[in-house]
Image (tube, rainbow, N blue to C red; front, side):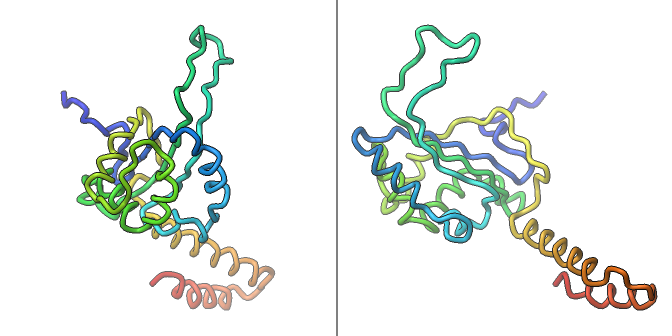
Length: 200
């Protein structure tokens, strides 16, 4: 029986779940929280410049919940607040997927260096994007293993999802625009003509 490798719980086909947990410098918590609140959403987010990312977010953890049955007693206390970063991504192919998560961590450095420095710059020991190897090593050391990662379509890239959603929207528009059309031959001609333009 093949033994699982480190990172296998974070992997599903060409998809990968990244979870990073880094301690925030004392006294920097309010500035980091304000910066995170000011990040754009959608196309304005720095995460939109990462082509492999389906979903990602940063959030701050200031305390652990202890109001559940079986919680440790006394409740554990954090020595500092932590920055949690999670991302669900898909590499464009199996060869690129084998290079995850290192290739993605390097992509953070090269594609959104200003955002990475502005955010992780509030964290203890952060070396900055100007030191490529140290940057990747720092984030890799903060990675938490994912034990259960489920993705609906493990080998479907962000671009393929966007394309499929675009085709769906065009089909919905076609159905709306041709609702009530009685001439089935004309409807078929219109569908064949329009649908031919929906994919490159």
